[in-house]
Length: 463
Image (cartoon, rainbow, N blue to C red; front, side, top):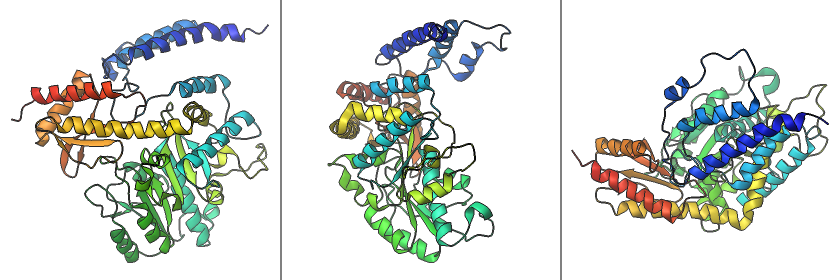
């Protein structure tokens, strides 16, 4: 008999014990870590020992080292940086992904992983009301998903111009211009930098951060030629959605490729109640979103969706003698993302969708939005609190008067750790930014969070 199960068994059992202890502690523990990175580092051996260590002992040591430095991101009272929790089926599926250790690049080599991811992709397109013929790539996150969508757009523009991008590169080729709202996420700028496309032309936005279609039309008319237009489904601070129908029409009338950064907000499309706020989004050419935000699967999992598979695959496909490419129209996974080698990160997506079902996904998304509205209503009842945005999805931006006081209250909340809400600045003001992304957040978490903010407000009077 192989010694393989015995070699893994004790270590996996200890991992299960530690994982269970961590998950049990999350609902009641302080959200903030009790140690910072420097303090955790002091507990780690400075030099790698010469001798081997029993695998189970390594797991015990790792759990003990990490515990003080862990943020309870899965907590129903964590509202920082648009980070979701993890659904049970998705977490368990992710463990299986590690155990199976499938390098998900080729359908021929890893047929189970490819088929399950293709199933998840089909379900996603249906749920999001996007074209069923679109390609879906499972990326590390929304930053890479934006990169993929814009790379496909770049490929399309160069092909339309008759420029051989693969052979000639960008140098000497037709110059394209990218247009995006002034309140775009920095991930868009990062993706453009990766792609060598330079800085975008910023387009005026309204007070909620929505791009103004008339301003987009004027900007594009001033700089005609091959162009990409980046729209936003879910503003970082307000949660607002760009006016998709009008803006996409402006862009397409001028021959542009339209990409939508919908890191968390694209999920509003699954809800009959929320979908009208994204009317027309299906007419875009590519979309980026995260599964590890609103869908609550483990990190890392982004989704790059491209309506023109031929442009996506021309941008990312690779052909060599040792790779056995698929002969079906579905394409290989490596043709849809930047990586030739990757874990089967789409399998936890399949598990999350299968656990929830269509109605469950809709209910979860609508519950996140309802909890954001409840937090805003509760906070608005505290003297000195101002809600700065129209709460249309899962974001709430709060001021406590002066920038100084807002900063102090934010720092106090993070230090106390009963709730985690991160600070930011928006439209020239310091704010407390709340992002409701966790499937476990309930009315009790909302009430406890409002109480924590009330306590911090009372402890930090205006000076």
